[in-house]
Image 1 (cartoon, rainbow, N blue to C red):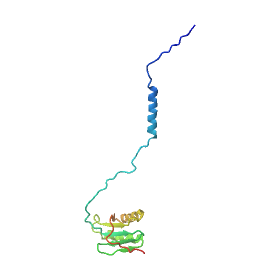
Image 2 (cartoon, rainbow, N blue to C red):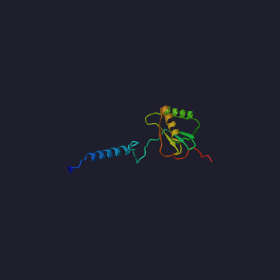
Image 3 (spheres, rainbow, N blue to C red):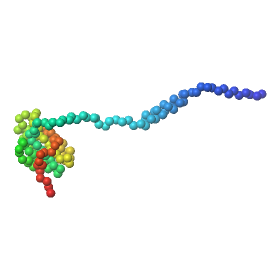
Length: 149
């Protein structure tokens, strides 16, 4: 007896395996791709064309060698400060002699090479003494300390 084989051809195509492959590829690319998170906040800094009419009641200058000089008033001479205790006493005097503490401030001038830690120390000294110390963006008219040669 001869057995007859039946070859039924189906004209349909199953998409189930193809969708599984696509989903696996999608998951693979989502897991391996890097997400970009901003590391810093975008800050819009104010800009001004004019300069303020307020003058600092006193000035502090720090040069690249770490020497500090102070000046109280507009036409006074620069005084060399040796220690932070002298600077703290100077800031205490500025606080006591200020008539209006809201509009009185001390301008801090520092060279570009001065470590930021030193600037923060001076700002903290002023804060501890109740004096507003403002970091100035321009150098003083004349350098208060002589250069070492």
